[in-house]
Length: 181
Image (cartoon, rainbow, N blue to C red; front, top):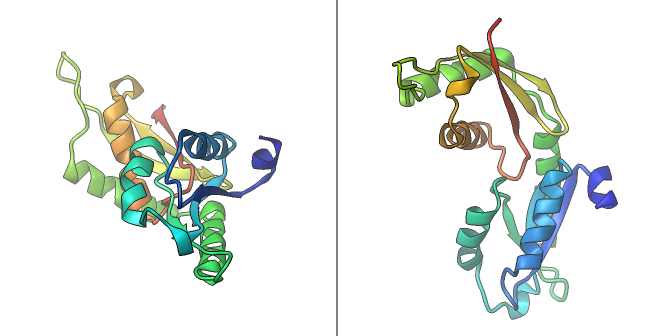
């Protein structure tokens, strides 16, 4: 846990000869909680019983960050260079900033794609504008007309679309929905 708290990028090692076990998911969750970007590494790829597409559904179901997956073999060195490239790319995303104008264009697209949830009295959530307030990990502040209208489903949808749009798979994105004052 202390190592994860000091790290920017964590590697969750999965023994490909066994497949994903609960302990692997717990380690990845420790990394997320500590604010680390996470990369899943399938080791022992040379004797693997499972493929990347076999483990991807379970990881996506259980890990909110949607971490990228890299298969490696220490014995044959297969995938090691790709692993190092992925770590470097993930670190760049972990420390990057998104321009406010670009973020606001994204929010405008979200509004057009899916209107915000509404309350019983007919008030509808409106994503007004946003900004990135910090990096390592990226934290965003999205200003809305009424934060009480945010549903868990809508919040996750916004987070997942943000990951897709800005290629933040594996990065622990934090979004604060706040009332415009």
